[in-house]
Image (cartoon, rainbow, N blue to C red):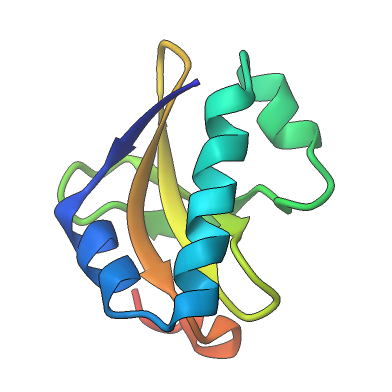
Length: 100
């Protein structure tokens, strides 16, 4: 799977603590190993889910969430190809869905 990383996501990763940065790297490697979207939907550990009512402020695309750590989530968009866009990183799960 092709991965695009938005500058915001990259900045948020770099500002995160080391365990979160390591978890992001592990997740990116996992995503790169996937060959189609069905693997993303079916992967137990990622908890990939559609965020109803949430869209990317830049593009208007539907946002999805994937688990990075127990408390951190990444907001993503899907593109044809298959490709995933890593839009933003949220390190406090409970507050994540109130930010947008």
